[in-house]
Amino acid sequence: MIKEYSLEGIRSHDINLLPDERGFFAEVMRRDWGNFLPDDIVQANLSFTYPGVVRAWHRHNRGQVDYFLVLKGASKICAYDEKSRKLVEVIASGARPMLLRVEGRYYHGFRAIADEPSLMVYFTTRLYDYKDPDEERIPWNDPRIKPVEVNGNKGDPRCGLPWDWFYPPYK
Image 1 (cartoon, one colour):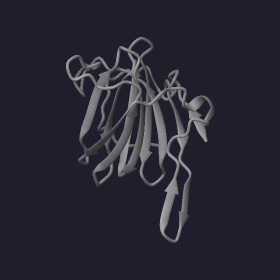
Image 2 (spheres, one colour):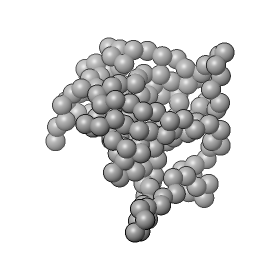
Image 3 (cartoon, helix red, strand yellow):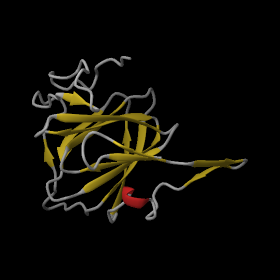
Image 4 (cartoon, one colour):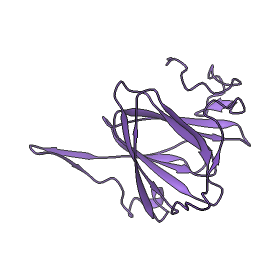
């Protein structure tokens, strides 16, 4: 199932696990997933992150798109558009895999939120250039990340405040 989010170009695709007596098999990326995968993937990276660690914020100004897949643990992945001040927050988990597409033009990052480390593989549409990286970085706690809307909700209690990666979950 494909889900669209409130920032253009951010969407997720649920991963179908096919279990049998040996374990399971899953297709994590297919060219024929319609408009979900319009990009050419050129690099795959693996990230192991200890519980509670935040890896944020950065963006890519040369058109890179990232695809995130949490294999183990859980992560809160966020993308922020500084122009509209909209923020998308997605909880991704190895228990229910999904592939999340994030346009690199948005500031993005994640926090490992489970009691175990987060193991994530992510795919990119541009090769990392060691001499001239396409990364504009700001601190994980930068007070300029102040959303007016979270996942399309202007009434979210975190709106209008500097983004707090450690804000307690609420209903």
